[in-house]
Length: 293
Image 1 (cartoon, rainbow, N blue to C red):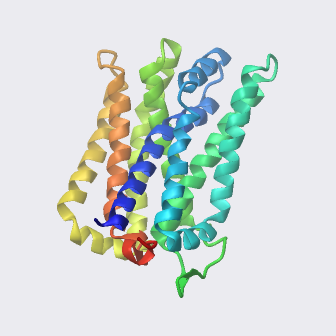
Image 2: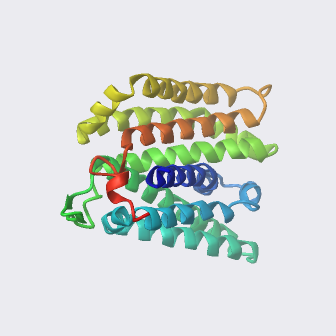
């Protein structure tokens, strides 16, 4: 039994579930900034109330798997991404506090909505920065992190942060389209008309920049030309279909959310193919970083 490979597959599984499940409620939180009507904002928050706190369990599972299965990778990646990780965790905690306080506040709900939206925004940007840092590479010497905590602050990581934010916002708008009624549904449809295309455009721009930042990605395309081409086609097709479905009232409300999930899943699959068989992208393989049996 190949325990490192099984551990890596479970790590990818946990991260994918986190991105899909927590992504839509982070997206809903960010979209609060685009809605002025307090009644509609209340309905937006109510749409994620049953699920938002449980989704983060998958992030904990991913962290535990990395620590237990690949301690070498954990010891390198944690200091490499200390700043965005701390920002993300504090933001997720702030979201939990603001979520509870807004329900018990009669006069300051708008301010707590801003805190909830701000926490969602920072968490999404921090996660995007981590993705960018993984793609551009981590400096390693003698199996230890040899860079600095500010290595992640590059234009490329800013681009990946905005791209991930657009993806989460697309997921959030799709969820509101599915669960919302009247004004909430109309608001979600209006956002979907441009968010999906913006996510597509940013992803194309990020992909072009990634090849320049990380030459190893060109070799990845050579290894998996058919799979990556199909994933790219699926990603682009879903974006166009979301924009089309958002303009029609005769399309089932769940279609936009399903297509947004398909976009995220195809993106995660592309990253998985690009990084495999490395747990620290383009540096250390699964088997080199694996703990003892």
